[in-house]
Each structure stands twice: as C-alpha cells, then as structure tokens.
Image (cartoon, rainbow, N blue to C red; front, side, top):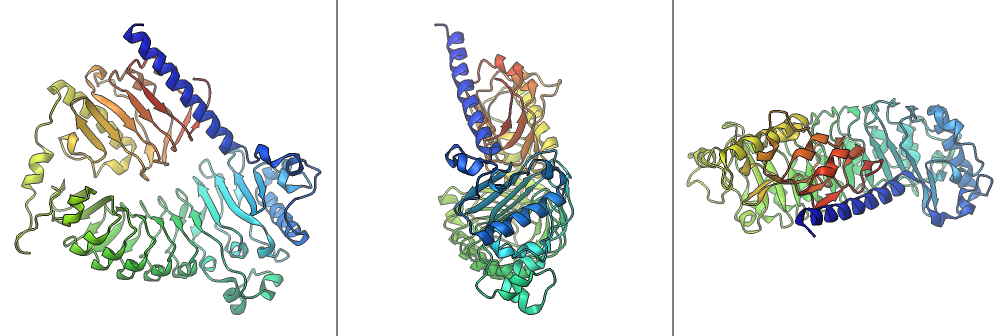
Length: 515
C-alpha cells in the first residue's frame, strides 16, 4: 500500500472514530431521558415516581410557573407525569431540568407564595441560550429552592444583579421578614439550608457587586461569572467559602486589591480574573493556597514583586501575572516547571522567567534579556516559513481577544500556548476560559509555508463557531482537537483533502451532519 493510501486509511479511521464520539456526545447532551429510565418514567400518563405527594404537588406548580414565563413550554409540557416532559429528567436524587432550544424565550419566574420552595425537588437547572432569548433578572425568590445544587445559564440575556437573598439561610430570611417567602417556608425553620454547589452565568449581562452575603453559601464549589459587567471589589468575607474550588471573574469590571483573607480558601484550585481593574501588591498570605493549581491574573495593574511565600503553592501548575515591572519568581516554580506567564506593564513586553532576584529593591530588573528572547531569532524554520506561520497565528488574536496581551513578541516561539520544534509548531490552547472563534486562513498566507502541525483547543469551553474550510489548505496540519468546546455546525467537506491529518477529536461539541 502506498504511503498516500495508508494516510487516507488512517484518516478514514480517525474520522469514523470522531464521528462516533460526536454522535455519542450529542445523544448524551440532547436527550434528557436515558434508556435505563424505562417506560414507567417517560410514559405521559404514568404516575410520577420517587417523590412524595407534597413534593409532586409543589414541583408541578413550579413547572407550571415556568410554562407561564416561557410560553413555548406550554405546548410541549402537557403530560400529567412531569417526568415525561421534554428537557426533564427525574432521578431518585431529584429533578434535572435542561432547556437548550433556540425557540424558547421568556424569563425565569419568581416563586408564587402558594409554592413551598423546599418541597420542589429541582436539583439541577440548565439553560443554554442563543443570545438574548432569556431576559429579565435572576429571581430573588429562588433562594427557597433548597434542593437546587446546580444553576447554569449560558449565552442568555439575563441582567440585573446577583440577588443578596440567595446567600442568606432560609431561616434567617424568614426571621427578618423578607418578602416573597411562602407561608410554609416561613413556618419551616433552621433545617432548610442551601445545597447550591455550582453557579454558572457566564456571558450574560449581570452587573452590580459580588454580594458579601454569598459568603454564607458554604456549599458552593464553582462560581463562573466571566464576561459579565460585574462591578465592585472582591468581598473579603468570601474567604469563608471553604468548599469553593473554581472562581472565574475574567472579563468583568471588578476592581480593588486581592483580599488578604482569601489565603484561607484552602479548597480553591482555579482562580481566573484576567482583564479587570485589580491593583495593588500580591498578598503574601496567598502562599497558603495549597490547592491552587491555576491562577490567571494577567490584564490587571498589580505592582511590586512576587512574594517568596507564593512558592509554597504546592499544587500550582499554571499562572499568569501582570506587574508594573519584571521581577523574579520563586525558585520552586522553576524546579516544578510551573507554566509561568509574566507581563510588564511599564515595558509592554513579556518578562524572562527567572528565579534570580535583583540584589536590591532599587535595581529593577531590566527587560533587555527578555526583549532579546522576545525579538530574537526564531529557530528551525526558513524566513518564508516564519513569515507565513506568524501571519497565520496573528489572525487568532483578532478572533480570540484574550491572546492579544499574550502574543506580542516577534518571536512567536516564546508565546504562551505555542511550542516550536524542528518538526513544526504546536498550538495548545487547552483548558482555558478564552472566548471567541477560530479564524479562516487569510488569502495573503502561503499555506505551503505554514509549519503548524497541531491545533488543540480541547476543554476551552467558550471557543465557538464554525469549522474554517480554509484549514484544509494547511498541508502540515496533523492534529486537530476541539473536544469539550462550543464549536458547532458541520465539518467542511474540504477537510477530506487534509492528507497530513492523523488525529481529529470533536467529541462533546455541537457538531452535526455527515462526515
């Protein structure tokens, strides 16, 4: 068999495997009911399983309120057995509600006083929007849904502020006489506590401050508020969120300093707050964040040095910082090969990563050494390959704006997420919160001279859009992955001509159509 035929055979196998992954992921994400549920759950006229009569009554009333606020549901939610409703999955642990149709528009309902929120068995609420089809605000009365453990909104038009009432225990709200509390909830007492673990509302229009009252949400494990016009400072009281693992505030308008008290957040693993208005020095107390593995603070206005106490972040694997001047990093970061990105605001350049500190505070480290690398020669490739590869990569800065402050050097081999080897250039923008889409190849680029062999965006969940047909002309491209992203549409037929392609992973995307 010729090498060309062999490549086609391997490519066919890869495409078949990718199709299987995509098909399985679409079946898993679109269908709310699983085959194991059986007919007794999905039958329209069957009895509702699992829940008590009181739970059934108040859950049904809550879903009826949802039909009023999102009118299109009224025509599809017609069964007596609400477990048979489209987008509803009933489990012994509770009810999961997933709405992801572009045809749905409306708002989220307040809970009527006739409904006992703690008797509503809703455990997961997910709404995948398509722009602004979901409007209004976050209902303050949803604090009564004490079974709710996951609240997810994406690409919605929800506006307003984060309700302070959501962060106050039910018993405290009843004692203080807050409005919109059901008579039954008032009669309940201190046994009802929030179960909320995951809160995602990225890409909406939520404004206002981060409520200090949310510090009482001690069950919270994830908060995703990136790409919202959030204002105000980081609440010092949030240090009591002892179970918080992930906090994403990238591309908001938060300001102020990093709270010293947050050094007590021993469960925090990921903190992203890029492109905000944070300032001041880096608190030494944060060195106690023993679980922190990913800290992204580039695009802010911090000053001073990196405290040596930060070297005690034993789990740290990736960090980006922006300081007024370049400085040294803790020796442990070098030893453990932490992925460090350090940008100088004054020099407008990437810094050399070194653990060698200046002898005195009066001698600020020069950017000349980093500038030499930044603008130095690019290894391995011919001049034509360098020019065309750089032109191809530069286009990503226009479609993924998070790359703009990171990809500034003439030497693209020193850019974060880019690896140069004699075999070619690998671009691995994986596991990020970058928002945007991937570009077409510019007509000015000679694709025969582009030496990019790998384009991996896996687990960068906010990378979206269609697959560029012009990538078929990238003759060196061997590896492409968009797994666990928001990419959609069909795979261009032109990609069938990518003779060098050996690996393609589109699993858990919104890809459809035939391969």
